[in-house]
Length: 222
Image (cartoon, rainbow, N blue to C red; front, side, top):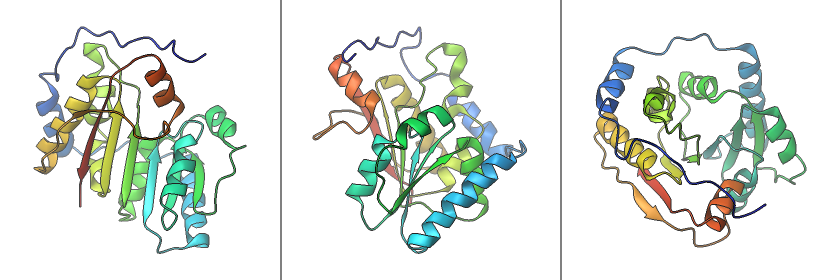
């Protein structure tokens, strides 16, 4: 049912005071959790699909693609790029399978934490990188679960490209912008935003129908 999405409720109304120190700590101490084999296999299959289509095609990562609306749309909007839609849920990926993906796109069922590190280890650079409506983890104690507060954040940024993050919680976007600026020195500012065309994801469609304000940050990481 459209238009019934709850508004985010949080005791936190501005960027977390601990965010700068947490970002510094993650850059000082590399993340060393072992990478699981199923993520290596999904990564290898995705890169092989790219190599089979055009190994030199600029790469777009749709991180947390869900059922794959956004992966399909991005592949259509950037026909000379190769798009990898990654999600850790096999259920969501399978629900996306009926979509007729063009040859320049593929789904990968994998944990993003491992997928990002595998890309970084291989020296892969992205052309564009999308984080579309990630779980906001709105409780004050959830900071380290948000991508900009997670130990994986240095690997995420190391992939470069034009990074775009969208959310229906302004605090998440303000924190993401602050963390990017602290880590890279590049200007990053969150902004209120409305899509000019069709919603890119089911969440975006539902939030718009429910009257939520949408926010994003876009920054070119080079």
